[in-house]
Image (cartoon, rainbow, N blue to C red; front, side, top):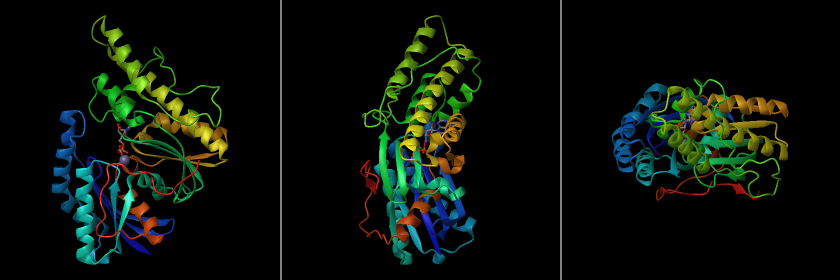
Length: 351
Ligand code: KG4
Ligand code: ZN
């Protein structure tokens, strides 16, 4: 049994968590997430403000995670920290704090790749969300379609060629006058749409695509953003958009994104004969996406697992969980552990 402290500061959430377990049998002891609301004013994350906010929050957030779990710092066996990818200044706060804490307590440190954290998140709540499976990671910064034969071995099938799925949600939300981050607001607006008045073409999805084609698994979301912009401009020629128009556009956008993501997940699960599909990342909160993938999975005899919102969006529990795996593999980071804005997912195997 290992009691591991996870720390996450890659973007605009300062988070700490205690997780206990061995192999795939884990118990979440605590999870504290401090979301930096300040960025709302700017309509996006301001890196320098994020770093300073992490500096203020990291000590109290970690202290609350310990308190919530009812453990003393001395009881921890290891510290796992996100060291890439993300905003460099933000990452450095978590990495420096984790190293200092671990050094003062004479504990090992494990550096965790943020996307590997998202990959592990669902397994904290769903015992069966373990390899082999097909994974769709859809966040604000990444869109990855992976085949996962076992933990630590990731076959990257597809990725976005431009905007990430969450980024597309956020940008279209902005075009419709919704607050940042817009994904959740787009989903709520889309739910109000009556009928299908608008339709956008499915980005990078065609029936004649074949396995082996470079676009069979890849995604592209920048074109649909332009389509939304043009639709908004055209409607605005006749005056301000009605609430019905805005809802209709949000719905059409969401339908196009969801249909594309679902189709490619089905292709991946079918090609690799996987019976489980795991969703991760903030966009995995979207119920239209969950419903669509769930139904599509049922039609091919597979089961979908999605995380609850707290574990789908950025959090330290997923970092502790992925860190536990890396720790059990014998990984130990030196005190020279650094932060990186970009870094390939560790364990990537040939597609
Ligand atoms: O994984 P995450 O918390 O942060 C990153 O690692 O980027 O993902 C945040 C993204 C944002 O783009 C946000 O708009 C999106 O997840 N998101 C959603 C929903 N909830 C969050 N997108 C669509 N529908 C939602 N319900
Ligand atoms: Zn994330």
